Structures are given as C-alpha cells and as structure tokens.
Length: 247
Image (cartoon, rainbow, N blue to C red):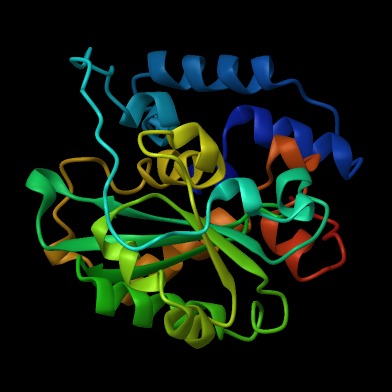
C-alpha cells in the first residue's frame, strides 16, 4: 500500500520483492487486489495511483513537416563516445525541457544519466542563458560532480547556447546534438519525461510549482525500482548504494 501510494507500479513492487527475496507475489495479484478495492464500498481508491489512470489516451496528431534548425556548427550525436551509446559507464547524460500548457515561459529542465537513469529536475525559464546556468548547477551537485562526461540534447533554441567551446568549458562536458526531429535518439530522457507526467500532467501549470516540491518528485523517481535495472533504483546504481532489506 505504501509503495502504490508512492506511484510504484504493481510490476515494480512484485519485481523488487522477488529480487530482494522478501516474498513472492505476482503483479497480477497486486492488480487483482486493486480491482477488489475498487469494487469495495469503503475503498481507498488505490487505482488513482496507477499511471494508466492518470494519463489520458493520446490523440492522433497530424504529421508535421520538420525543418532542421540552422546556426553554428554543432557536434553530432554520431561523434558521441561508444561508452555512452552502450551505457557502459556513468556520466553520459541526456537533456530536455518539459513544457506546461500552451508552452508558457516556465518549464522543467530534465537531465538524466543514460546508464543509471538517475533524474535531475529544475524549474527554469525557457531562455538559453538560464538553461545553461541550471545545467551547470545540476552537473556540479555532489552526486554528479566527478561523473559528468557528456550531454546530449535536441536542436532546441534553448540549447544552442551550449554550442560554443566556451560554453562547453563552463559545463565541463562535451555537448552533442541529435538529428532534427529524431526524438528516439534521446529516448532515455523522453521516457523519463513520460514518468514525470504521472506527477505533472500536461495541463499542469508550472507557475504554481516550487523547486522544493519538484525535488520531492525527483527523489521519488530516483528511489523507484526500474525493470531495466533489474529492479534496482537509479540511486543505487549511480551512488553505488547497498541494497536495502525492505521495499
């Protein structure tokens, strides 16, 4: 019940419990428990914590004609180190902005480590200088300070500030850019934004959000087990933390 209310999926609960050898329960059993609770007159409404409940069906979108952004010469994703592509070492990040309704001025900067899936979040204005400063602040945090090696993002105007050698030197990492209109080339951050939408739906107004509240969401995402990590948490992978003996 505690983990369901922390937005863990039934699969994550079952997988984590099995990995730690605490108890054996299938995710189907957890779903049946939630369904039984839904039919109960005095239910706790556990289904509201499921991701599929909070996310609405996607509408079909019209195909867009994509044009590459012209500007200063950028380092292509094809030049990125193999360690980043293969996820064999920590410190290779992906970066993107998660925008609110009507693409207002305020947004959430999302930076995620490709290997550990460790997420860092920061409220920013959609301005290149502000995004550059926020990225620099995130990469200098204690848990990331000695690990940062590269960062990959799309061709958004807010990231073009990082094209110059001087800007890269400020960040202390090499910056790579994906091909225009190729979101699959930065799939790790796209998936992280999908998880973040469970807490901050598309209609959520970021003007009502505080950095302190965002930090709590960041902590929940980084202490949530991931199937791709064999049900370890991003914090355990990035910080080499010992496994806890409880969920």
